[in-house]
Image 1 (tube, rainbow, N blue to C red):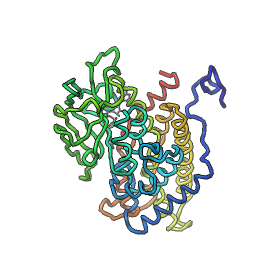
Image 2 (cartoon, rainbow, N blue to C red):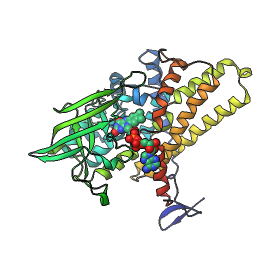
Image 3 (spheres, helix red, strand yellow):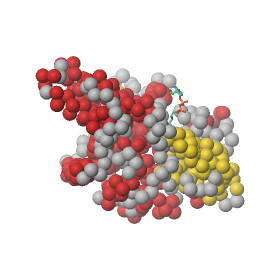
Image 4 (spheres, helix red, strand yellow):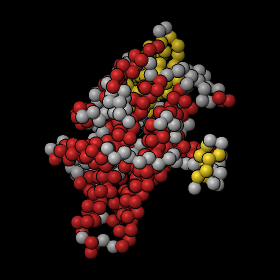
Length: 402
Ligand SMILES: Cc1cc2nc3c(=O)[nH]c(=O)nc-3n(C[C@H](O)[C@H](O)[C@H](O)COP(=O)(O)OP(=O)(O)OC[C@H]3O[C@@H](n4cnc5c(N)ncnc54)[C@H](O)[C@@H]3O)c2cc1C
């Protein structure tokens, strides 16, 4: 039950309300959903791709991104004057959740479409918007995320990559790490120090630079996964020249900008749907054994997983609605990510326990391949985008508990 105290939503216990007002999807979005589903059915039928788990990290397919763009499903929230479609966040939500549920290969455009577009609109110069937004909406310009460094993951304020002032711009030196997709991407925003660290004001003196990854002095080195697959990279800067027009946002405002970017990064449906294609395949396998072969405990477990995806979606939609109305729902985004990523792991556990099909990373598709990818990627679910321990700290602080 809720009440309002001094303009802030609180519960009757006096604690702040955790999740924004629920959002009802307008009825007309059903037509958009049907259109996306028909497109995905046709793609699958043509053999263009096979559904996989955790596609937004590993399903890099530039042709697919372009085909989506041709239908107007990339850059949906980017204004028309910048090559986008001027549509709402909830319309984009419908498209993204359908893509993830289908296990479609969305990695190429994911970061650019999810967080770079909104950040460019919020903090970019007119020239930067015109240079990058149309390519993002066409599915031709891809971005990575240049935040983490060796020894600076959770504690991002401790980044050591630095920018020194030089004639006409800045020179970057340092190392970024765990940079997903940097070997394919065109650019990223690098969070760097532009003023020495002051322990009393740790978040001051940080800035963002829009770094095109083909600049001289940028070295991209692969960090293979256990499977040998290449998604991660270490990105080294050796006195990389960045002209003044690629300073991103305000010098010294890097911390606030990154925090805003993280709200987009943490709150979307990818934080609970990474293993949804495995859940669908699990239900398919159980159904194939016939109702006589599925015990009550299994049915309860599946029922619990299916009902919780609905709860998570309701919460995630509420965050999308709050973002659309200009609020900054960082606390709710942290909460959805914590609950959602643990849920993704529970699907993997259930799939391993309830069906006697071993994971097979060499399989073309189907349950064995979905399970193999999900098992191998699962350790990252609760780490990427901020670890769950850190997110709980954010929630506790937001509730005034620490
Ligand atoms: C699949 C994947 C993709 C990624 N892609 C990118 C990317 O594209 N770009 C990018 O910049 N980064 C990326 N990352 C990095 C990711 O953001 C970091 O791994 C994450 O922020 C944690 O940082 P860390 O690895 O340095 O661990 P650390 O910060 O060293 O944490 C180690 C452990 O200590 C715990 N811990 C740390 N501080 C606290 C605290 N204050 N309270 C309680 N516990 C704490 C953590 O929860 C964790 O369990 C990716 C990571 C993964 C797994």
